Length: 92
Figure 1: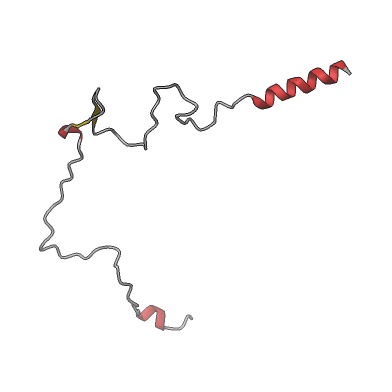
Figure 2: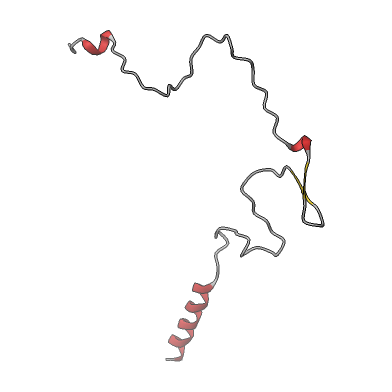
């Protein structure tokens, strides 16, 4: 009887132990842990609660001029039905 009681208590303690593979959230981490949304910060917080944007950290997209570009977009917004000669011929 005492042996069964001790193994039961041991099993209960094993069940309550958290796994190291659990998802780390701000509730299970240290007090100053901030998980974020998997993106780089664009500035920093001030002591008085403000936020300062740093221009060197902002994304800078370089888009070429496509006014006289001959090709069309790869995916069309309006799907059109295209008939080819291969589809109309019966299979031999």
